[in-house]
Amino acid sequence: MKKTKKLNQIFLKTPLGTARISGDEEGISSIQILDEKIPTSTEIPDFLRLAFQQLNDYFNGELKEFSLKLNPDGTEFQQKVWKALNQIPFGKTCSYLELSKKLGDEKAIRAVASANGKNPLWVVIPCHRIIGSDGSLTGYAGGLARKQWLLNHEKNTTQLSMF
Image (cartoon, rainbow, N blue to C red; front, side, top):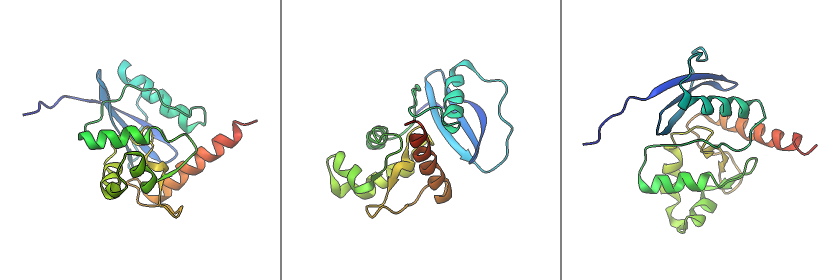
């Protein structure tokens, strides 16, 4: 039986709601977006400080790539999908089919979509960069309006950084 660890949690106000960041010395295990308005944390454990800062920088348009110690809980296949999601460049998108092909099995599209939907690290593992093969927005745990906002944010940040 797997022993349950006590994770610390902190909260960060973002343009899309409150981000709850959970983790311990072994890494960040989850980042979730909440609709509830919870004040931004003032006391931040050292091992969560970098995640707090990098998310804040991302939303301020100052960060394009996260460099955090991650420790998400998932199956071997989910971990493989999440690793592949991290290869999608900032400001770019990829379809479920393209991602399935990159993982070596285009028939695994439903399994890839399921793993994408179970991503516990909102924004940091960029599941919002996955779109339909026809370029349409597809399901997103945080809601399609948030997905559209994130894609626009990255597109606009990329354009601004060229000058």
